[in-house]
Figure (tube, rainbow, N blue to C red):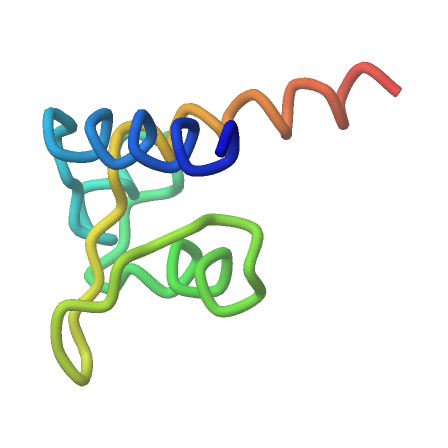
Amino acid sequence: FVGKAITQSRQEEHNMDRFYTPLELMDVLNFKPQRTARPVMHLINTGRLKAHRISARAYRVSETDLKEYLASIKVDAGK
């Protein structure tokens, strides 16, 4: 039952999160300005950045998932 409590807690975090489009994340992640979000989509498609698919071609990334990604790259940089 602990896992269920953790899942509910995580869902509650997502309910209060801000959600970003891949294009918005280009600025947040300080990627080189482009007209497309291809670098962010690459992170999503390879599973390095979690995203919620809201339609056939549209994704949103929660602030919680963005923070997890940023923490993971900080750990990788420290190796």
